Length: 250
Image (tube, rainbow, N blue to C red; front, side):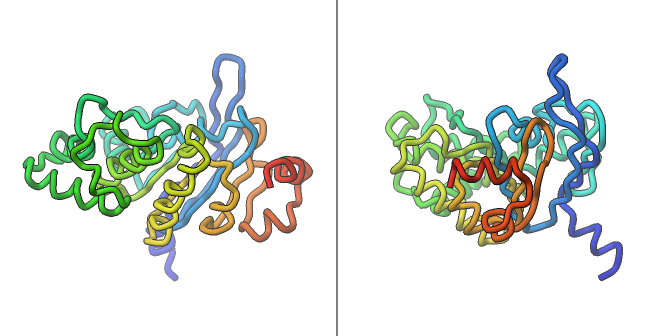
């Protein structure tokens, strides 16, 4: 494989990324390479920097040192670069952040209409296809408040996918859900992973991680303390902190 094709295979490259909140050093020298089509699960204790790290990747949080490159675009203070990167990343949060006064289909179609300048017909057709993808087309004309938490999170995933992102990022997408709703959201994410989407998932759902992750990153105190395949991480973790954490969640 040529150097050029290897380079083209890289979707995200971070080098020595550092961030502070005041005197708190929340990210300490984070260097990661994520390839096209790779599914990376990030786990670790609360406050370890997991969510902060993925939020730096589309400038929801500003990093203070180091370099972030997303699909060949350097993330810096250039607004055009930030907009380019944000157009390539779909983000799903713990909270669904749906517009309560708009129907499900309008929630999904809004960004394609406003940002991609699609006609209402085009955007509605796209939205319906995304709702079919997440297995809730029958909910299209309801309002978010009429849906379960799991259904609302699937709408949020459909909304992110409607922008045709190259990368999907999930920040603890099931942590606000009741246990019986978690599986329906994870099923959608598993289908998405198997379709070849590049994904970064912050989660404590270790069954999901074992099934679909290509690689796991264990964060602790702002650092990556260990990384490896699911088999390696679950069956033979090397770092004491990883062993301790996994013994509590598995």
